[in-house]
Length: 467
Image 1 (cartoon, rainbow, N blue to C red):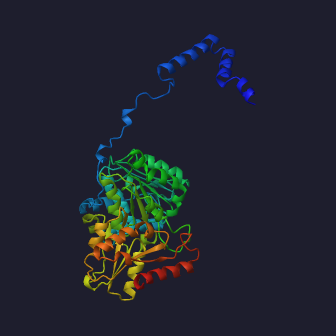
Image 2 (tube, helix red, strand yellow):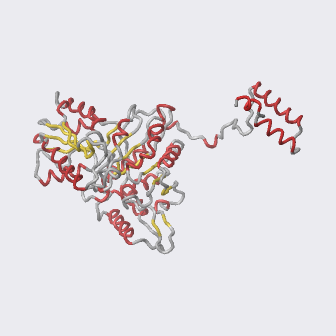
Image 3 (cartoon, rainbow, N blue to C red):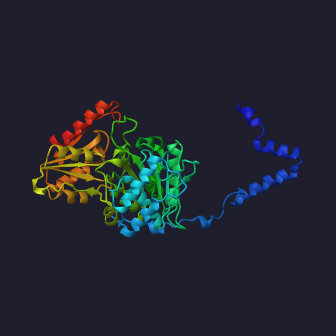
């Protein structure tokens, strides 16, 4: 076999013979090409004619404004009230002649009431208004994902479909003449391909808000390699900055193991050296300020958001225009019940939707000596802010971390050392007594039966108050 291979004419020889036979080149010309090629190799010249010898300077991106910044979780993200109201009115306008589907028309009518102060703000309104303010400030916005025009849970409806002819209208593309691009694409079911493209896009567009949203949070599983090889480690390996935002719907509502968890623990395990941000906002104002912070700050780090599902329409998960105008993203939200600090003997720390289950249980059972504190940013972990939220509880005896996820998942294992450190700052020995309330360890993210889910949820909430 080796002799046959050695005696067989090479592809170059066969190709040269064919060209000579066809009269394309002479035998002497073919030999001259070989000699010229060898001479160029010896001289170190370029031998590939298509090789780019000089980069196209018009494609350069100026990253200098984004380099050398130390981590800071704070940014001025409030927006003047009159500008908020003006932009809110514009993003709710749909031209005459567009026949809007009945339920969508109701959503837009409610948003007009929110803009006028007649209704509390919900998640969809605050999120959309965040995009409008960024566009108004000169920042292009790009959103891709499997159902982003409508939103998996019908909260966004950034694209309005005309029921007469199937045409579409995007209000955020018509805020003002000459505005930056607002791009929104429903992408196909290849998470790896789409997320990889958006990562690359974000590394070349530092002035843009670039978002990839999973239909359900755990769908990013199909793009795990992109998270591991690029998003979490690209800056450390290559010095490559990226401000990509991932919106991953997350929360335990009885939908089973494939539609409950965005695998928060995987992201937290990858966190080090301030390489990315992992946040779990629980109010419309928080997502407004979080999205704005991602662009307003000159710092460019990937942002992973455990976004909600049922909270999109939860009657308690609302905000006001004043919260958007005057606030900022709070990495820790203190107790909202106005409890007398000296009376509190137990503090429950939590993130995400479970907060609303906890306050419902506290109200129903008339508990007045337990405070509930939300950690809205899990990485970089806000130790100082958490200490500030807890320091006034001078009679604190029990500190609990409550989560919906099983013991071996969620924030407990990756983040408990941060919580224990803060507890020790409050009272020596308290860190070692930190308690856990959540689901038992499980190989699957969630139970497959609604009855099991309901019982587990009831138990973990009660454990948070009674362990």
